[in-house]
Length: 385
Picture 1 (cartoon, rainbow, N blue to C red):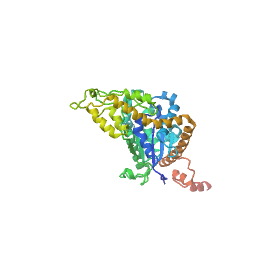
Picture 2: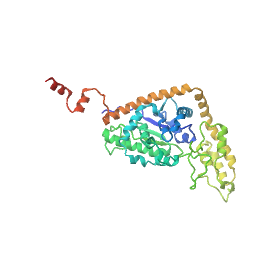
Picture 3: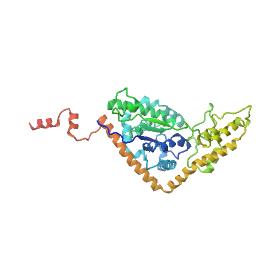
Picture 4: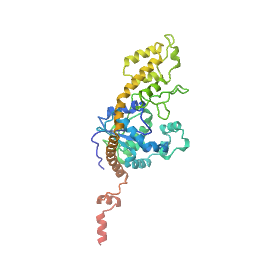
């Protein structure tokens, strides 16, 4: 079977639409998407079906959330002239590939997936999880593989899912496309494989911690999350940003810092944020040194951070205002991206179905000869006798 090579390398990534996006999304993946979109044929999935896996009640806000996430994408700089933003549920080939992949992945592999285990703990759904939830890793693998991307920008917490996807791709290429088992990951496609072995692209910050939350007993702060109510959203007004940063945890030892009793900047939310977002690196360096010795207050450092975050969000929110006021433009972008996604996904599914043997409606004579193991013409000649 001859597989049509892609004219341009692809990028695939996306989000589950559970609400507006926040700073954790920005540094975790969005910045890389914007940076890489010129170099790749880019597909950004809004995984609305997966939003139902942990809470089917979210369906009441699903359309609104899909719209909000799309607006956030456009506001941070994802360009619809370069990239395709699409809705998962409107690309039926993804569901078909999900079903097929489920036939080739052992249940134990899914059950022991670290991300699934962690989400079971965090969401507290215990044994009441749906079949869709436990099938989430297969669904996510299908989301990726159906577009045959080379790169997938993700947050570090998604690496177990990506590694599972890579493993599935290898095994399918070995089994159905005769790729030699000693082939390097970079050469699977050159050796006839359908699926590239994707490379994850991690943001500059592994996990951005949230605001307004204290560390646990081990001194670890929870990551920024909508569900934990500790997020600064890309849509937050200056007043809301100010309120959230003023409520940020501060090291109680900093009140007693001195030359003889310095405090560390490590694991301090205030300085994690300054290092992540403050473009004035000289200020960060000098103020950080002063902070260690008690020569600058938490209040001054928080006021500076408020200024930095609001300046970062201002151009994003200007674009956001435009798209909120032009909803038809947003819907047209989604419609166009979804059409492009369907074209790409249907092609991959067709190749895979042919390899697996579930392509039933090729009406050529050779096709039926292969199935029957004999020539249709010979059979017809016997009937004539």
